[in-house]
Structure formats: C-alpha cells, structure tokens
Amino acid sequence: MVNAVKDCQRFDRATYEPSLTGKVFIDHSGEMFDFSKSCVVHNGLDTVRQLYDGMMIPAVLSSIETAYLAGYGCQVELGGFSWVVSSGGKSGYRYTLRNPNLGLVLLVSSSYTEKDFQGAHLKIQASPSFLLARSIEDVQCDMDHFAASIFFEGFGYSGVALHICMDVQGWALPADLDSRITTRARRIIRHSGVQGLDFEYNDVAVVYGRGQSFTFGQQSSLQFAAYNKTKAITDKGEQELWVPVWEQSGIYDDSLPVNRLEARFHHSVINQFANGSGIEAFCLLDLKEHLTGLWAYALNNFRLDDTRTYINPAWQYFRDDVVFYHEVKKDIDYKRMYVNPDAQGKPTERAIKICFGHLTSIFRRNAFSLKKAFTCLRESGLWENLLELYLNKGKGVADIYHDLFKGLMKHPVDSEVPYTPWIDFDDAFPVPF
Image 1 (cartoon, rainbow, N blue to C red):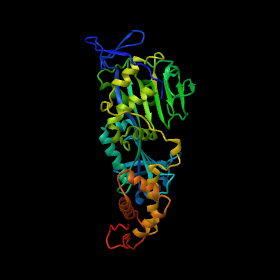
Image 2: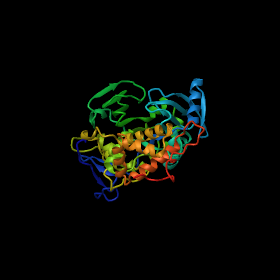
Image 3: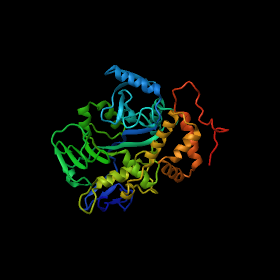
C-alpha cells in the first residue's frame, strides 16, 4: 500500500465555504485550482478481455481448424460474421479469430486443455471501436452471443480483464511524472522516441520519449499508463475514431493536446478485488457498478503527490470526481485479497471446477454409468476439495450428483448406441447415499 497523504481542501465556488464536493481546490502552498469547468473530454472502457469456460462444439472447432490449415487469410463463419483465422501464437490459445470491422478478437481453444475437454477455451478481446458503440449490457450480450456460437449450452464466465481510461485537456503531463508519482514500481527505464505502449517489463516504471508517455507496473497485475493521446491517435491513424468521441463532450478544443490516464486491471487483479471486497466479478456486467471504485483505487495506488504530505489537486479531482457509469458505492471498501502463502498449496475454485469437468468428460468418453461415475468421483483425490467447494456455496452431495449427471449427458460419445448413464437405476435422479 502506498503511503497515505492528505487531500487538498475543497471549497464551494459560489460561497467559498468548505465543501466535500466543491470544485475549488487549495493546495499545500495556498494556490487555488478551479475545476468547476470540467477538463475531461471522455472517460470509459478502453479494452475488455472476457474469459469463458465450456465445452467446444466439435463442428465449430473443426471449421476453425480447416480454415487455419487452408492458409493465411482464410475465414470462418461464426455467429453471423466472418472471421480471419490465424495461429494463436504465444497467447495460450491455438487459434486467433479477427474481425476488424467489429473490433473483436476471439482467442479459441486453450493450449493447456485438450480440445474435447471442458475448459477455458475462449477469450474475447473487445477494442475501443466495439466498446464505444455499445452500452455495457450490449457489450456483454454480444460477447455472450459469440461464446454461444462456440460452446455447448451451459458455458460460463471464468474471469474478466479491463482497461478504464480518462482523457483530459488543459492539464499537462508533468515531465517528471516518473519521479513524482507514488507507486510500488521499484526501478525506472527511460526510452527516448520509442513508439507504442505494448511492453512486457515486470514491476517497472517506463518512460517513453521526453516524458510524453509513462507506464507503471506490470501487465500481469495492476498497470497504470499516462500518455499523450493526441500523438498516439496520430501515429496509429485513429483520428476518425477518437476526435468525434471527444467532440461529444462539448468542451473539446482541437488546438490543445489530449492526455490520457489509463488503469489496466489483469483478470487476476479483478479476482483479488472480488475476494477482498465481497463482490461478484466474473464478467464485465458484474463490474458495471464498480468501475468508479476501481478507478479511484488505481489513482490512489499510482498517485501524483505535490509533497510527501499532500496530493496534487488535479489528481485528487480525477480520483474523486470522475464517474464511470455509476457513482462509487460508499458501502464497499475496494481492496484486494492476496493469496496467503500458507494456503498456496490449496487448489483454487477454478482448478477444482476444471478437474471436475475433465473427469466428467473422461467418464462420458468411456460410457460410464452414472453409478460408476459417481463411485469413481468419490474415490478420486478431487472429492474432498469438490465437496468443500459445494458446501461453501450452500450446496451438498446431491447437487454434485445432479451436476455430474448433467455433465455426462452433455458430452458427446462417438457411438451409434444411445447413451443412458442412469441405466443402473429406476429413475433419472436417484441419489445413492
């Protein structure tokens, strides 16, 4: 946790009386800053990565593999759209499906799980062009539509990562931001004239090109970036995307540069917030009402201080007054719960669910009856962890039994003989205990 500092005093602009919501800030030296006229031309989601867990439809996977083997540029139809198929590279997935017009990338078939086993076989990456045109509800609905085109019914969410951003005018990035910001990053790397922001340094503060861009932290955790967005969209040719967005604010001045602050939350960090703050955080829609709280957390952990005692007034304004879809929930203390070293040997909930799915797939592949599958499950090394997981959710052995039955029925078997896993029993749902 970064060191605590004092906030600047705030006053109401009309009366100059102290006010917790006043837009006039007085810094440590007595200088006044008036934020009654907003300098924020845009704030919202910049990137979303939604992870899904499920059993892939063999015919869909086969069509993707066929397109991939056909060579570069070949496409596959999925969810009513055409996707260019390529290798998953180092992403941890076997295949990459792109649709530049939609602004989506689908990473399909986990490299760490057998193709015909249930697992985390899909990551959907949504770009700004996709996100800006949709509400959060529509974004989730559309991503789920494509997931449903890949998985059998019953797929679920296995995590979400996101970048939230704010664009401002009339406030300049301090050239010495790297030395003034309070952060955990332990070392600084300077690059003059480096283009782009996609780097893989661990636990560092990176400065690019004469203080035009800064990146703090690591990609696999909570990362923070501050950079000249006007230069970035010029370099990437994205003026037609972003300038109309800024113009909608009604205060955009095309003669002034736009600077961006961006907080990037890895899905593991979102899981830590879920555990530490007691919130649901499996999908984007779960986080809709918490984005303002996460933003405030990020700006307090990557904080611009004027002195060792006082925060910078502009930073305080950005942290406390910028709203993302919903006002911050006052009844939630946004904090992260890290894994206790004493509990690191204990399997995670996700690992237990994946093992349960894999075992069910194996039982189904070998045409086990429900009775035999349940007996094998209880004799497996997974049983105690699985039972504890269900009990913690207010469920019991009967729920495991029923979920096992549904899993056996869901996974296909290459046989002309109808598969009836309950054939040992008099009805479909006997519970042998």
